[in-house]
Length: 228
Image: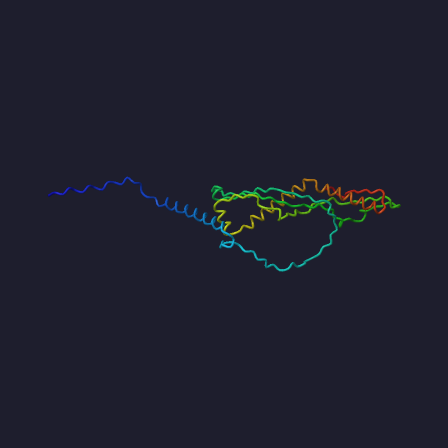
């Protein structure tokens, strides 16, 4: 009895497997699970969250380093508020993966003062009868911005996936410091363009005039030594 020959193996029509696609899919699923786990941990109550922070103040007492005499008149103060829109993106990655955009509301004040410590000889001239006086003052200057941390805050923030994971495991003090510096600089620029120094000059002139008239001078003239 003759047995029929076994048919030859037919070539498979299925495409060859690509292990790279499985690896990429596995990594995507792993990142998604990690992100979901981080969100779940953040949703836990404070006492159940193993990654929650505890703040303990171990600072020592403040030590007085120096005392300086102040010889200036605070003539005006301006209150300012600015919204800082800071965006950082990766060059070759979409913002959903790597990137950060922060809206920061900065609130602060700028003082304008007149420094009397540099008044030299001849700054105050009176007549013989001591009824008229001429005083020469320096122009008002602007103090550095005093940013109010209680009323300065992050209004909104958009972060990519990698940035969220990084923020969970570590803080970024440089980011916060940059926001405060930008807000302070923008407020300082706004104060310089607001006419605050001119208002301080006028207030100082009025204060000096009222003071000297109360001392018995009938004619009071206030001039300025230099241009603002």
